[in-house]
Length: 406
Ligand code: AMP
Image 1 (cartoon, rainbow, N blue to C red):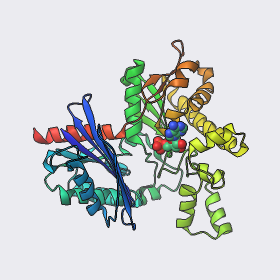
Image 2 (spheres, rainbow, N blue to C red):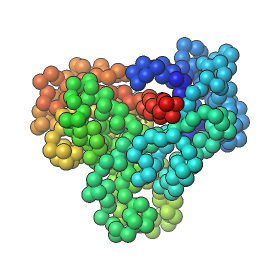
Image 3 (cartoon, rainbow, N blue to C red):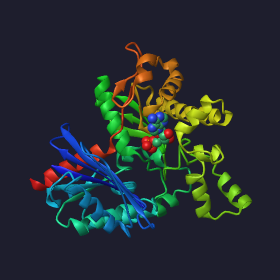
Image 4 (cartoon, helix red, strand yellow):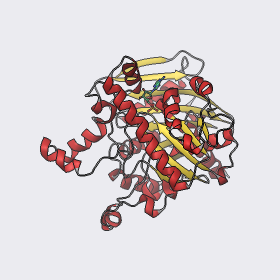
């Protein structure tokens, strides 16, 4: 089954085409990104498997035209990967916010569109773009079934005392103010892969997954179900990130707004786009690679930021150990945790009191493929698992379409 996986942002369309035989047998035919939609010049980077990548620049007025350009690239005689649009069996979309409406992936229909539209209120930068993507596909491929996979769905098992804020209850009833979490697709995937690799039965397990990338979150998973996660009403809550501040004293919000004469939107931008690595480095970088290079060159600020990164992860993991009364497996994933052995080592060292022991040699070279990085006698298993959210979306889409065909 050929599945097109789409991740639409406000000015971009990321895509992958997977040929799915079953859950475990599949091949990636192509992936790419169309960026800067509705700007003077857009850029398509198309990477067909086994062929030379293509980079093209052209004006793209909107997502509908953008989707057509992506599909044209897929059927191009030179760098395409399928012979016609009719080869595409289904399209799966990543959706950032599904709130309490969705605890699993579903096929798109009018009611699903209505609920995703309601959720735009919680994810104003993301959900409207996802809806544009669904509409664009409907226009170009009207007969192809579409499915949606939600970043929040995996976290819907959290108990009320975990997801409620101690704010007046009426705001939960009136506006749905509560913790929803994010990165759920990634936490689900790496927890399942990690458990399988470590030989731990998922239905009798306590797993903590650390998704540490440009956006970062940590999740506690007991018996395959989320107990707690660090992101909240929006992805701002939790730990330090590339450009987000993570959890701060809420009193700082009105304080800084008054001092700096900022509007709510400007304050939201400050906390989401101008903080974290970028803000603490005074605008130098939001990229962990630069911070590591600078720390190695003796830069004190870079040392401070990376020390805070390790501390924030440690505090979250520690609190989740307490919430689950122990931990069997800690999993590291996403750009920063997959590529920085020192980070995995430093965080794991803080759990030596639980008997967690990292294998320094294995950890130092673990990159790109699933690896157990703890020693055989470690009381807590530790794994590095490259995340693959697109694969989860493709699998869910395949299952939904198979059911539809029955
Ligand atoms: P993600 O959001 O998962 O794509 O992760 C992005 C983050 O991963 C950035 O802060 C990068 O600096 C970091 N990263 C990606 N590749 C590497 C690498 N090879 N070495 C160190 N950090 C990396």
